Length: 468
Ligand SMILES: Cc1ncc(COP(=O)(O)O)c(C=O)c1O
Image 1 (cartoon, rainbow, N blue to C red):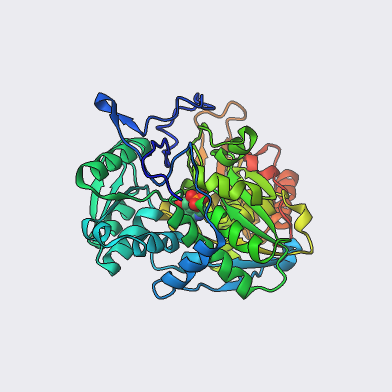
Image 2: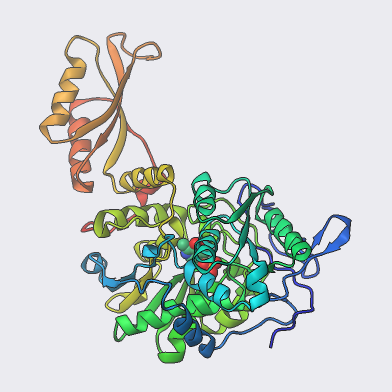
């Protein structure tokens, strides 16, 4: 089934900063040079060959389910508290509860248990920015298989340290994923290591498909499953598992607008190089979907949506507040698409969302929460000109307190005020309960002060369901 001798051009995640945004599409013959390094050295991944892509089968997935059962958590799939507010019978598959915080363990473990004895002895190698590396290191450690991961220098320090903690050989090298992959492929060739692509290796896709088997066992009569897409391995496995058992279930793929590589591949009817930008959904930042993943998934995907970054931030906030779940950007894209009104046809239906990863940097999480609050009018910024006479600012504070508005930050400025010499500009950041409360604050300020300017945020114009 697999032609192990032909050249491949597969590419993995690159960081948005490093990626050339002008390279909108590829030329077919001129893919990213992951297969060619200095001295025209030929490097290839024998499991991912563009000229003869590999479709996985349902039997591959059932075999994976059987073989990884003892090392993977069958995570809960529970009804969401957001169901009523959004008018969808929503279920959340919480695969972020796997030991390393993402579904990537399924594929990683299966790829490892499927190695031949000699391959197990010598070990495996991969390039990854995060979740796949963590999963491979963790299960390599459990199974006693040597693992090397090449992580680009911009990989989160937290994830690099976690991989080392599992006893893996962690090489931090390469400016971006393209370079990291070339380094990994070169080492694979020199040392005889098996290269395991994080989304396009057939065993990886089969392993991810076990998520689909679990979902249909856990939730009866599903109408649709919403799946985030990066390199396409997850949707390939899940779509095949679900559609084989229940052909009428809709499979909806979601990408960030900053890395629409599956969308571009569908348009071109083959994976093509796509310009990507840095995104909150860093796990999805793959400029070219996998060739095996594409041939497997493309015929099974009923709808594809591309979501805006701001909705991803709001979805992260909603999942923290309503579900007590800390989800990384990639894992929140499904809810983002629903909140953004891009899946209106799911109203009244039973839908499963994959919360497939929870590895988000604390600082990014903080920023998402603040942006989400701002989008809902619960975090407001305004400047008001008040009297500089004693008690002017105190009066403003009293007024805010009288309606239960809480001040987070306050600053006043005298020198650059052009108007009345006895005036002062006061800049306030404050918290309100909801959008109605914010309206009450706005009205009160406009009634009592002549000059009030509210800070604008693109997101203040977003229309969130009020009841959430
Ligand atoms: C949390 C999370 N969700 C979704 C994906 C997308 O999976 P795939 O690359 O197989 O499409 C990834 C990929 O790393 C991920 O980390």
